[in-house]
Length: 279
Image (cartoon, rainbow, N blue to C red; front, side, top):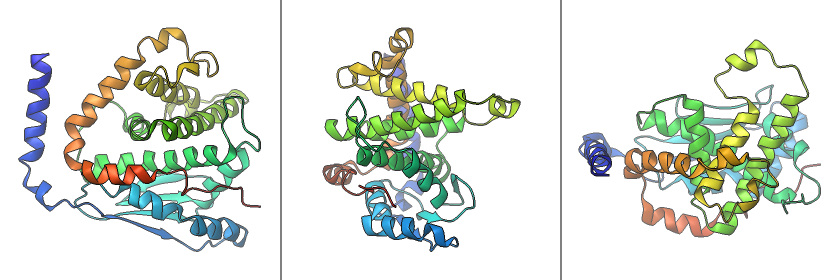
């Protein structure tokens, strides 16, 4: 235990002694809805703007002290994709169209509504890519694969929300993982799938469930029975969650204005993401 506290103290001291931290500021997350080049995406473009999706996400991320501006952007890509590059998080209209198509029309057996599914999936899309931005722009060291860290970053941030919001948002993330796992099972896996920088959809699905169950096994007590999280994995989930929590608090927390984060947290995310499908 003493060694753990020594290590965390050293990490915090290294961050706080960094003169660049003095130049980092909150409120540096901008946004842009790029007008689609495909007329078929105009309805999605207008709907996202009306709902203020990027405005809310920008505000939600504003407590992070970035050294320069980060931009969240919706644009036409020509394919289903989302990525971070050069201080920009880009989400394709094609990706959101995909989310609209797979979102449940009726509440699921776990009580997940279409609105909450879209909320969780959209939040996860941007938080995952923001995880990449945090690692890059804040020069956060990490071990393992960057895509795994970005997945854990997204799940961890959502698990810090109010309990009701956390439950509903994480159900949405788990729903997306479940659908992508089903799509994976319906086709023959190739060498490219195993060589991809991302883990397989089924692995990512169980990783998300494990983070949720590890953080609150009561709130997510149905993860084993309804979401099929193996009991053997569930036994280690608290350790997995605490491991990432330790890393987050050591390396990323110094860059977060927590007083500001609490004010933003009260507003939540669920009322700012698309409530209805775009026809």
